[in-house]
Length: 133
Image (cartoon, rainbow, N blue to C red; front, side, top):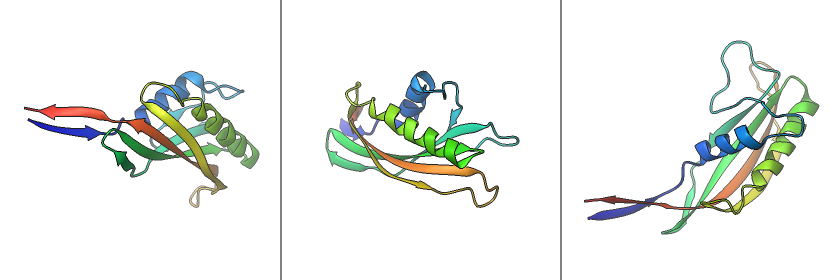
């Protein structure tokens, strides 16, 4: 029998949490893994998963980038700040040991000029045990 550990699907976990908990005037803001095609909403959040690190057989650090898009720079920045604060509340949930917000910076989309803020958030998570007979 082979046993391995795998990280939690952090993208799905974060999307689900934001869909249910994003507030402060931004409840209902679309959260996705891709930039919407066609006409974009006034504001939206894109989740991008980065390669993580295995800390131990039972723990992973899984960084993600939260892209906060909006038609105005101030709105994109505020949405990013609020999103990071909401995500920090995930610490202590099942499978989430820690949440740390790192870098945040203004990075408008070079193609469309749409305002965008990027925020890196590290999640320390417990592993999923996978067995094969």
